[in-house]
Length: 490
Image 1 (spheres, one colour):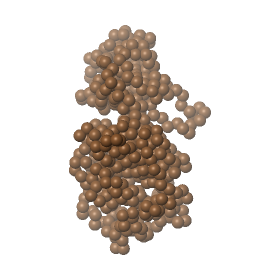
Image 2: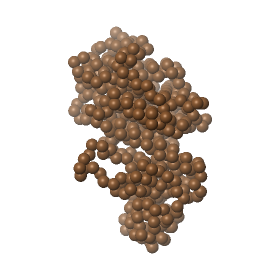
Image 3: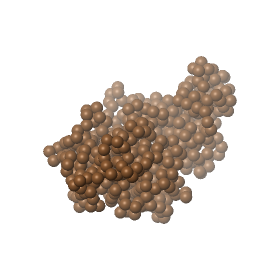
Image 4: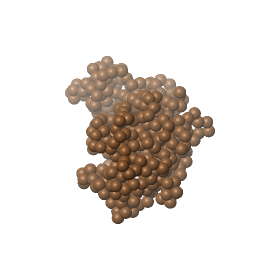
């Protein structure tokens, strides 16, 4: 979708649909609403009164302009109470784009006029227009769809504002890329296809990407990843994306879990739990999106994205509870439950990633149902061995309105990972499952400053929530980019 900046006024911008935000209780006092209502002969406030629109969060009112202004439709987006923020701008962009799905063009008036507002409005327009309709045919294929959007600047169109709109577009496209990968069916998005998607995304954004086949993975001694792969007829892959600017301030490595389908292995999942297991590669999708965005934005940070990808299936050579395998860094691991496969894949990939000597290492994984039990569907668990990293990552998440909650690495629970016959068991007991999973991963990060993001809840939703759509959400991409931008500014 084409995104541009415009200095046209609310009444003169030529578009199918014009979206602007309204704070609760401020409808009649809002200058933009007053301007449009005057031009429309009182019709805007009249419709708002008829529909009892008050500007509460989540409210949307679509009003025909009747030829009184250049836009064909005006959409008022309720923002609730509180001070205007960049979050409001992304909400207006998302809600406006969703209201414009049967139209071609959209104009968004951000509630804040600075670069952050322009960036957020552009990102919202791109992500709000998202639809996954690749497999729909005939009358099921949606008609229409936005082709362009304009972000309105209240003053002069400066270079900074124009750059902010382009940045918002790049971030929004990376979020949508992650959504596409998560929503793709597992017969299409298998490990080789996921690795190829990483390669294509890298090439398109100016980054590089190396892909390892099974033979190379064997050479790299990733025995835990290979153990998970044993029950599948499809070979595993490791993809290593690299964005390396000429002068990099820091090196950050992102690691993603790429289970393109998880049957649970021999400890098979119930049918209801298996139906959405195409989403078990959302951590990999997030990683791909972050690196692609960093490269597009030419951030002065060296950014690596490493994904380990396989299926977890039940073939004749599937790994078993009770098996023992060595890891890449030498620790032996006793298998307890074959449905706890993600941490095995991550263990080998994290061990490789730490060898790159990063300043920070951050992994994303749909790792545990226990984290969803603790935090619900809309919040990710954030585990870190470094308080400063935890602080910075939460601040980045808050700046883009993604929900992370700091979780403890409770040392006494490490006892539950002790094995009688190996260095480690890969699961603990039935309590504190998200914590023991993180503690297991910590065994493979060494002294690297590391954060583990358990995104099992917000990465894939069974219904739309807020500005996140049903299905793949692209959760974590915006936070990762915000973290890198803040790191570059420090």
